Length: 185
Image 1 (cartoon, rainbow, N blue to C red):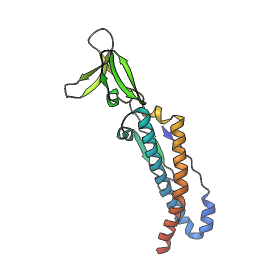
Image 2: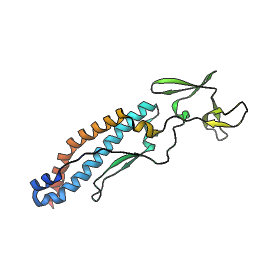
Image 3: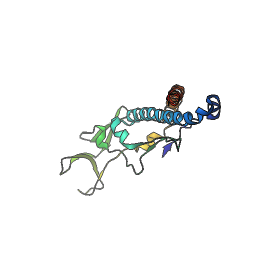
Protein backbone atom coordinates (compact mmCIF):
# COMPACT_ATOMS: atom_id res chain seq x y z
CA UNK A 1 0.00 0.00 0.00
CA UNK A 2 1.76 3.17 -1.13
CA UNK A 3 1.61 6.41 0.75
CA UNK A 4 0.65 9.18 -1.62
CA UNK A 5 2.70 12.32 -1.12
CA UNK A 6 1.41 14.72 -3.70
CA UNK A 7 3.84 17.57 -4.35
CA UNK A 8 2.57 19.46 -7.35
CA UNK A 9 4.51 22.13 -9.12
CA UNK A 10 3.66 24.18 -12.15
CA UNK A 11 6.83 23.59 -14.13
CA UNK A 12 5.55 25.45 -17.17
CA UNK A 13 6.32 28.77 -15.46
CA UNK A 14 9.87 27.64 -14.61
CA UNK A 15 10.40 26.28 -18.14
CA UNK A 16 9.17 29.57 -19.61
CA UNK A 17 11.55 31.58 -17.42
CA UNK A 18 14.51 29.38 -18.39
CA UNK A 19 13.70 29.38 -22.09
CA UNK A 20 14.79 26.48 -24.29
CA UNK A 21 17.19 25.13 -21.70
CA UNK A 22 14.28 24.62 -19.28
CA UNK A 23 12.87 21.70 -21.26
CA UNK A 24 16.04 19.71 -20.54
CA UNK A 25 16.72 21.00 -17.02
CA UNK A 26 13.32 20.86 -15.32
CA UNK A 27 12.65 17.09 -15.72
CA UNK A 28 16.12 16.24 -14.42
CA UNK A 29 15.78 18.61 -11.46
CA UNK A 30 12.31 17.27 -10.72
CA UNK A 31 13.48 13.65 -10.79
CA UNK A 32 16.43 14.38 -8.53
CA UNK A 33 14.34 16.41 -6.08
CA UNK A 34 11.63 13.75 -5.92
CA UNK A 35 14.18 11.04 -5.12
CA UNK A 36 15.93 13.11 -2.45
CA UNK A 37 12.61 14.05 -0.86
CA UNK A 38 11.47 10.43 -0.95
CA UNK A 39 14.66 9.26 0.79
CA UNK A 40 14.13 11.85 3.53
CA UNK A 41 10.50 10.83 3.93
CA UNK A 42 11.49 7.17 4.12
CA UNK A 43 14.07 7.91 6.82
CA UNK A 44 11.47 9.82 8.86
CA UNK A 45 8.90 7.05 8.40
CA UNK A 46 11.39 4.39 9.49
CA UNK A 47 12.31 6.41 12.57
CA UNK A 48 8.69 7.02 13.62
CA UNK A 49 7.43 3.50 12.92
CA UNK A 50 10.37 1.90 14.77
CA UNK A 51 9.68 4.13 17.76
CA UNK A 52 5.95 3.33 17.67
CA UNK A 53 6.34 -0.44 17.32
CA UNK A 54 9.45 -0.82 19.47
CA UNK A 55 11.73 -2.62 17.01
CA UNK A 56 14.97 -1.63 15.35
CA UNK A 57 14.96 0.69 12.36
CA UNK A 58 16.64 -2.06 10.35
CA UNK A 59 13.59 -4.27 10.82
CA UNK A 60 11.29 -1.51 9.55
CA UNK A 61 13.55 -0.69 6.60
CA UNK A 62 13.30 -4.34 5.49
CA UNK A 63 9.51 -3.93 5.23
CA UNK A 64 9.49 -0.69 3.19
CA UNK A 65 10.05 -0.26 -0.53
CA UNK A 66 11.18 3.02 -2.12
CA UNK A 67 10.23 3.43 -5.76
CA UNK A 68 12.44 6.05 -7.37
CA UNK A 69 11.41 8.62 -9.95
CA UNK A 70 12.83 8.40 -13.47
CA UNK A 71 12.85 10.88 -16.33
CA UNK A 72 10.02 8.90 -17.91
CA UNK A 73 7.95 8.59 -14.72
CA UNK A 74 8.32 11.69 -12.60
CA UNK A 75 6.81 9.93 -9.60
CA UNK A 76 8.29 8.34 -6.50
CA UNK A 77 6.59 6.45 -3.70
CA UNK A 78 7.21 4.65 -0.44
CA UNK A 79 5.27 1.43 0.03
CA UNK A 80 5.14 -1.48 2.38
CA UNK A 81 6.39 -4.60 0.63
CA UNK A 82 3.56 -6.84 -0.53
CA UNK A 83 2.94 -10.01 1.43
CA UNK A 84 4.60 -8.76 4.60
CA UNK A 85 3.57 -10.65 7.68
CA UNK A 86 3.16 -9.38 11.18
CA UNK A 87 6.27 -8.66 13.26
CA UNK A 88 7.22 -11.55 15.50
CA UNK A 89 7.00 -10.97 19.27
CA UNK A 90 10.54 -12.37 19.35
CA UNK A 91 11.81 -9.04 17.96
CA UNK A 92 10.23 -7.08 20.84
CA UNK A 93 12.61 -8.10 23.64
CA UNK A 94 10.47 -10.87 25.19
CA UNK A 95 10.97 -12.05 28.77
CA UNK A 96 9.63 -15.24 30.30
CA UNK A 97 7.66 -14.72 33.54
CA UNK A 98 5.52 -17.02 35.68
CA UNK A 99 2.33 -15.67 34.13
CA UNK A 100 3.55 -15.83 30.54
CA UNK A 101 5.74 -13.68 28.32
CA UNK A 102 6.14 -9.92 28.46
CA UNK A 103 7.30 -7.87 25.51
CA UNK A 104 8.07 -4.19 24.99
CA UNK A 105 6.05 -2.05 22.60
CA UNK A 106 5.28 1.67 22.53
CA UNK A 107 7.43 2.20 25.61
CA UNK A 108 5.46 -0.24 27.81
CA UNK A 109 5.81 -3.89 28.71
CA UNK A 110 2.78 -6.00 27.86
CA UNK A 111 1.89 -9.51 29.04
CA UNK A 112 0.75 -12.45 26.95
CA UNK A 113 -0.74 -14.87 29.52
CA UNK A 114 0.18 -18.53 29.06
CA UNK A 115 2.81 -17.87 26.40
CA UNK A 116 6.36 -19.17 26.60
CA UNK A 117 9.68 -18.77 24.83
CA UNK A 118 10.59 -21.95 22.93
CA UNK A 119 14.06 -22.83 21.68
CA UNK A 120 13.88 -24.41 18.26
CA UNK A 121 16.10 -27.32 17.13
CA UNK A 122 18.20 -24.93 15.02
CA UNK A 123 18.83 -22.77 18.08
CA UNK A 124 16.43 -19.90 17.34
CA UNK A 125 14.01 -18.63 19.95
CA UNK A 126 10.34 -17.92 19.29
CA UNK A 127 7.41 -16.87 21.45
CA UNK A 128 4.58 -19.40 21.25
CA UNK A 129 1.29 -20.27 22.95
CA UNK A 130 -0.62 -23.55 23.12
CA UNK A 131 -3.88 -23.68 21.18
CA UNK A 132 -5.70 -25.83 23.73
CA UNK A 133 -4.89 -27.87 26.80
CA UNK A 134 -2.85 -30.44 24.86
CA UNK A 135 0.88 -30.18 24.34
CA UNK A 136 0.42 -29.54 20.61
CA UNK A 137 -0.47 -27.60 18.49
CA UNK A 138 1.37 -24.41 19.38
CA UNK A 139 1.17 -21.14 17.48
CA UNK A 140 3.88 -18.55 16.92
CA UNK A 141 2.82 -15.16 18.26
CA UNK A 142 3.04 -12.01 16.16
CA UNK A 143 2.12 -8.36 16.64
CA UNK A 144 1.04 -5.59 14.24
CA UNK A 145 1.92 -5.34 10.58
CA UNK A 146 4.06 -2.45 9.39
CA UNK A 147 1.23 -1.39 7.06
CA UNK A 148 -1.12 -0.80 9.98
CA UNK A 149 1.38 1.52 11.67
CA UNK A 150 2.40 3.09 8.34
CA UNK A 151 -1.10 4.45 7.70
CA UNK A 152 -1.53 6.14 11.10
CA UNK A 153 -2.49 9.78 10.69
CA UNK A 154 0.31 11.15 12.91
CA UNK A 155 2.95 9.33 10.85
CA UNK A 156 1.34 10.45 7.57
CA UNK A 157 1.32 14.09 8.74
CA UNK A 158 4.99 13.91 9.73
CA UNK A 159 5.89 12.38 6.36
CA UNK A 160 3.99 15.09 4.46
CA UNK A 161 5.74 17.77 6.49
CA UNK A 162 9.18 16.32 5.73
CA UNK A 163 8.30 16.01 2.03
CA UNK A 164 7.18 19.64 1.79
CA UNK A 165 10.21 20.96 3.69
CA UNK A 166 12.68 18.88 1.70
CA UNK A 167 11.06 19.78 -1.62
CA UNK A 168 11.20 23.52 -0.96
CA UNK A 169 14.87 23.31 0.07
CA UNK A 170 16.16 21.01 -2.66
CA UNK A 171 14.17 22.08 -5.77
CA UNK A 172 15.89 25.48 -6.36
CA UNK A 173 19.33 23.94 -5.78
CA UNK A 174 18.66 21.14 -8.25
CA UNK A 175 17.45 23.57 -10.93
CA UNK A 176 20.63 25.66 -10.47
CA UNK A 177 22.82 22.56 -10.54
CA UNK A 178 21.34 21.14 -13.73
CA UNK A 179 21.33 24.58 -15.37
CA UNK A 180 25.07 24.96 -14.71
CA UNK A 181 25.74 21.47 -16.09
CA UNK A 182 23.67 22.22 -19.20
CA UNK A 183 25.46 25.52 -19.80
CA UNK A 184 28.88 23.89 -19.47
CA UNK A 185 28.12 21.44 -22.28
